[in-house]
Amino acid sequence: MKYFPLLWAALWRKKARTIFTLLSITVAFLLFGMLQGVNAGFNQTVEKANVNRLVTTSSISLTESLPYGDMSQIEALPGVARVAHASWFGPYYQDPKNLVFSFPVEPDRYFAIYPELVLPKEQLEAFMQTRTGAVIGADLARQYGWKIGDRVPLHSTIWTKPDRTSDWTFDVVGIYQDPSDRAQENAFFFNYKYFDEGRSFGKGTVGWYIVQVKDPSQSAQVAAAVDKLFANSPDETKTETEKEFQQAFLKQIGDINMIVTYILFAVFFALLFATGSTMMQSVRERVPELAVLKTLGFSDTAMLTLVLCESLSLCLLAAALGLLAAWAIFPTLKDMLGVVELPMPVIAEGVAVAALLAFVTGIIPAWRAKRLDIVEALRG
Amino acid sequence: MSAIVSLSNVVKSYTRGKQTVEVLHHLSIEIAQGDFVALMGPSGSGKTTLLNLIGGLDRPSSGEVKVAGERIDQLSSGQLAKWRARHVGFVFQFYNLMPMLSAERNVELPLLLTSLSSAQRKKNVQAALTVVGLAERAKHKPAELSGGQAQRVAIARALVADPTLLVCDEPTGDLDRSTADEILHLLQVLNKDHGKTIVMVTHDPKAAEYASHQLHLDKGQLVEGDVKAAA
Image (cartoon, rainbow over all chains, first blue to last red; front, side, top):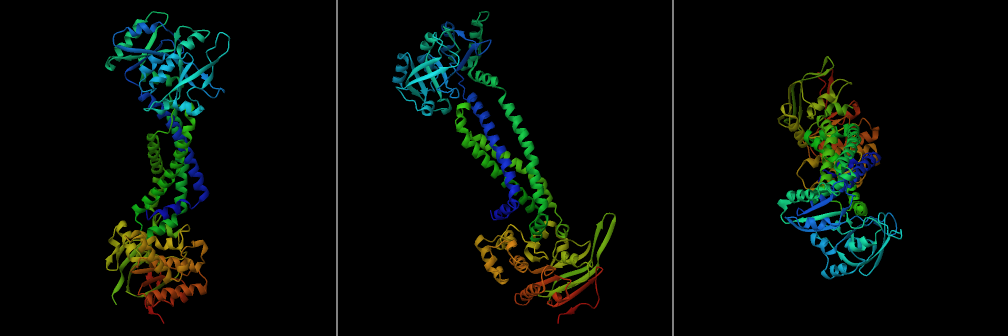
């Protein structure tokens, strides 16, 4: 701690240069925080997938519907505890940029298979009994100020009504919570019956089935049995665990992990040169000053440590600013990413990357300071 | 008085490319404790090289260098650094202060290597700045000080850890006559009143007059019979 004023003074010797270097590292870590945050958020969703649940979709594509009649056949298979279904409604609220994650479901089946979604019993009853009823996530309710009793119009980008309009009106009858993952509190569920009767095409179909197995160790056998059931039918299925399903869903967007890794590698590779050159220049300019410190009795190791600490201070300060900015910005992107806040492991990873960056960019100038010959350096 | 600096048969040579240049030739000197010695001689005579050996900044090619009872020519680089911190205060021609640090922070630098508390360090820094008459400029940065004041800060930095020996390389070389006289007077006070042993390299005969002894070097050798007591 007693060396801090010396470190700090050295760091700010050339203010403009330090500020520019600091800014470039800050921006890099902002990018790191955002990209790794998205990546970690998606991975978190996959990791939280329930091992009891399977997802059955059309073997052709996730966008292909399956007959509603398949449900009773799946339900009759040994090892299956219960079955629910959902479909993608694809609506927005008032403005196309206000996308809403909305799904027509059968209330009793859906909330039974997703016990982590907490909905008061009387609200579930109301949901089942109200044809136009909708249950929304607490976060979505907060976002638009919706409350029970409100009438909410949504415009579907997929489903039209016989009168060729795509505007659907719902009555909010319940608000659910998901204490295990607040990021899941942004969905909008409504009655499948209302949806199926109201749509102009695709009647009697669902988007996918969710199958709860009695014994998770039998998941593979049950999945195979479901797919075997519909083999060689017009609607062949693909059944996988919830985790596999979510991974496949994310892969549709792209291999996020790989994209993030490549982008960050490029950014930090460029940063290595920028920061490394700043540190080299900073030490080169201070050769006489460093020689004086050695003259006063600072050992070779102390010089090495001082320069490394200088590099560490610069990188950690910039990383802290960048990660702080990412942490502040992250919640505003929730609608796009579905992740509520920057995960802590990303922050910890960022700090570790900053320390590594400091070491890599600082070690050569630090070594130079360590090996500095006092007599030569003082001679200039 | 006992010798605090003792050089015996010291040779120092440098290799420049394929050439080896011998700067000091079998030099033997003794400097008594409490002495104020001016090292004089023409450029290239080996004054600064000799000063660097006495101050533990460099090692001889052969021979013995004993300062404060220790064979410093045998110390490792790390040991030598510790030894310098404990025994030697350095004053340079161009002050060599850290431009981003205030006067008091500059003076504090040698104390960072000690185990003194922050409060004790502050106290010692104040005392050193008071000795050189700059206590009220403690918060000023080197760029806000005149040459004479900057050199006083450098002297305070050299003094603050209470070293055995003060080593000064042309301490007045960058100053006008009157400021130089002030600095030399200050060194004389430190020698006489505070008992500091001082070895000073200078080109200036007037500066050398402030010393109690003068040593003349020429071509890496002590000029015989040139060692004399100051007037």
